[in-house]
Length: 156
Image (cartoon, rainbow, N blue to C red; front, side, top):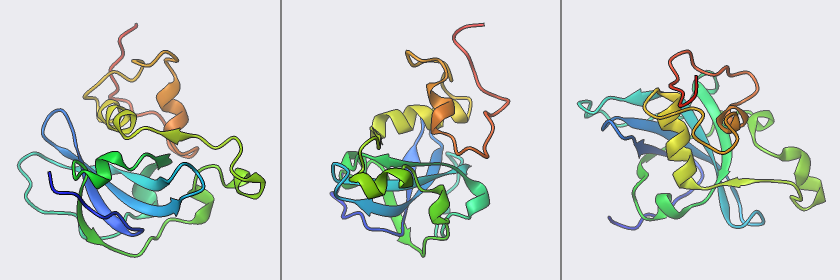
């Protein structure tokens, strides 16, 4: 994979286990938080047969999660950058803003691999309760977003 240079505004896709692709956008950069990227993830996704690439900014009503994320899969090109667009997401949706004034103490960074598993579970392609804390993925959703109806569970 070709190395990429991520930047705020980048629209990218995340490959999922069924060949479809989730859509994300880099909405912020926080070097003080272990060099993480603030990424927004959409409820919309591209099917495996779709050749269209995302070109527009994520609309706030489509965003399900905004997290500080490790940049490894962005830089390595697994999360392919397709375009750049202005960020439309309000700062109130950004994670851990309450920690900014105290040097980010208490902020959490999510590994990009965990984000891939979370998105697969959101779309019903993986188990929602696969983590040690069976409600872990619930905490990655924006407060206004409900757990999807079509989730799969390991436990009944």
